[in-house]
Amino acid sequence: MKVLTKEKIINYTLSEAWLKWTTEEGMNSFLVENCKIDLRIGGPFELYFLSDAPEGMKGSEGCKILSFIPKKMFSFSWNAPPSIPSIRDLGDVAWVVVEFEEVGPEQTLVRLQHLGFGEGEEWNKTYEYFEEAWDYVFNALHQDALNKHS
Image 1 (tube, rainbow, N blue to C red):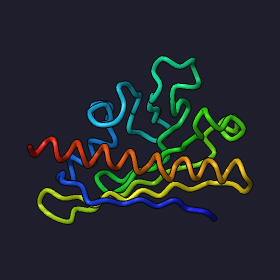
Image 2 (spheres, rainbow, N blue to C red):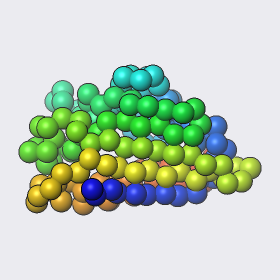
Image 3 (cartoon, helix red, strand yellow):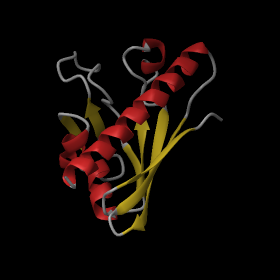
């Protein structure tokens, strides 16, 4: 099974890093202008990257929180971007696991694993898309932490 893994040490306390990923306020502070996050099993984890797009094409509509251990890990279902309609039409068939580990007083290792990729050319495009997209997310989080400390 293909697994896309990203990790980065971010200059946030464990609590700050956790809140950045698991709350609407946190996610809106570094990544998107609008989202719907309700940290409970089955709760929405919808990030709207394209607020002006038609319903269903804004971002991760329909994605849900699958599990969590407070300040340690959480997982959510995930869909493909609108630019790859053959995979997006399958719905939220992939999933993402985000883990948090305190490595210093104001440093947290954030590790992300994206799973559920199928086989074939369109799935390969989806993997390549997220290879870059998750880098963008981690860079935005890193920049947000730098801005906090400047």
